[in-house]
Length: 151
Image (cartoon, rainbow, N blue to C red; front, side, top):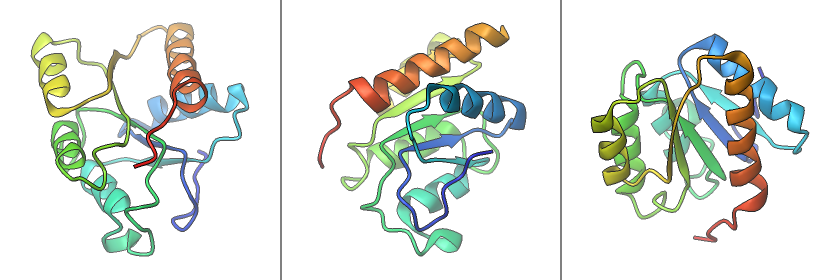
């Protein structure tokens, strides 16, 4: 897996507990050759520590936020919903684009995520090629086309 060290700036943070999905997403993004620095975290608690510069990630600054976060909902320790709530309720991190990338197509999850401040909600395609294409489209949009907030 591609991973930036804790002290490096991270363009994309992938919060995904399924190693196969994480590797597939990273491979799809790597194939775009965006020069993107990526980091993968497997549970919600560590994701919050990474973003807010706590515990094992105390050498990071909350101001050195990722350019975009791809967030699964069903995570160990702290759910994706709770990660999203924490990010969007803190003025220091509310500006970070969060794309929910999950297997849940439940209307209640979609509505809840948008109510919590998600910038986008994408249901993971089951098909390998469709999954790869979806992740590449997300990467192209959020890392190249979208004008990021300077907050």
